[in-house]
Image (tube, rainbow, N blue to C red; front, side, top):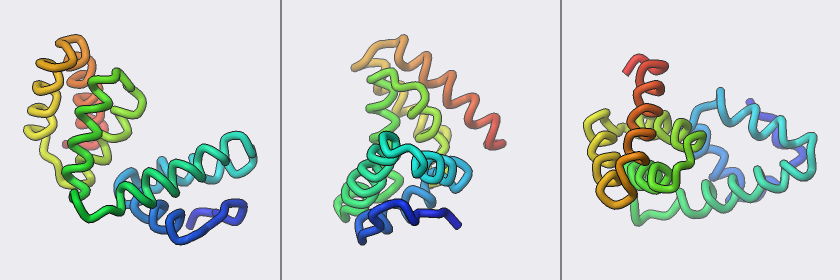
Length: 134
């Protein structure tokens, strides 16, 4: 159970929290939500991300969770956002993405964002796969 008593727990927040837990897992989400609750500055970010990204965009019917995960991997690798890439690689596996699909996304990113972005993405994903026993 995650303590959300200091948050504005509207429908979008609650839906977002449920999806966030499903994709990323409680081992990541719980410390993010509960840790930020004691710091109004960080709580603002967690409220926004949970409600807007996870509670609005991830809830839309136009794409399934697996497709959203693959898109995230492409964008995060292209942007060089290594911390988020690690987290969302785990989420992609949780959403049913295979190692082969993830490799294809990173190769596609190599063509359009450059080989260094793909090298970093493959390295990060390999660490996640090893951690998860995938």
